[in-house]
Length: 89
Figure 1 (cartoon, rainbow, N blue to C red):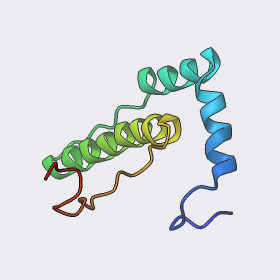
Figure 2: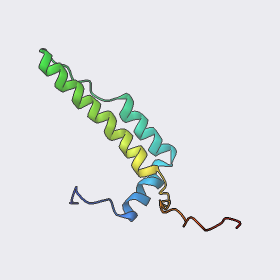
Figure 3: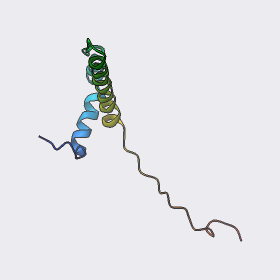
């Protein structure tokens, strides 16, 4: 079992990217979106809890798609060049 506080290993991310790039992977995500169980409640508190669980479900699916299919970008440097560099004097 993995520790939930650590980032996914690169090998795992690459595997999920390959799976989600296939028609079967997209079909699976679409199926999960279409066939989720709608939680219901009888009281106001139960309805609010059900809505928050459903929202969490949608966010989890979005995270799977966004985090596991997004290609990493190199971080751009926030350092600025010194003031005298690149100017014609």
